[in-house]
Length: 144
Image (cartoon, rainbow, N blue to C red; front, side):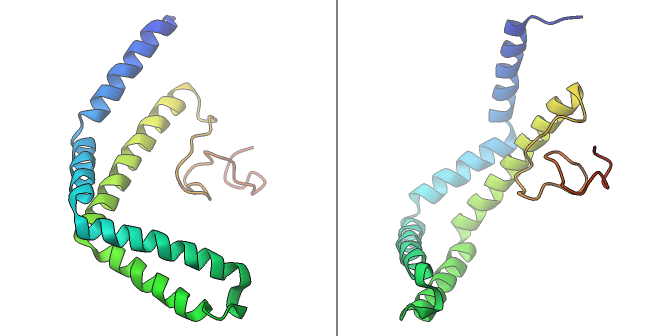
């Protein structure tokens, strides 16, 4: 049975609506809103962005830059603050859960056509359980 391309696109839009209405997507939008409204979090993010620019400048010269150790320590400290801030942590968690849902949907669709279709996993080294992007191991994982 062949399905017309326009019907397939309509069904894709329906799937997109279902994902957008899912509890995972709703939690993502809610956490994003809370993050955007949190003045302290926004100040931390802005400070981190500024510090990251300094860090990148220092990295050009590496340990020979006079501020290398100071800036490196400050970036790590600020990053830890970001990671432990409640609204930032909640947003990152919700973002990761939504990303996982989207990847699973992509895998289901792709693999329903063929197991050999490459699906980005979000991991630059690709999941070991599948060769969704090629493995460079010479076929030892079962791919050719």
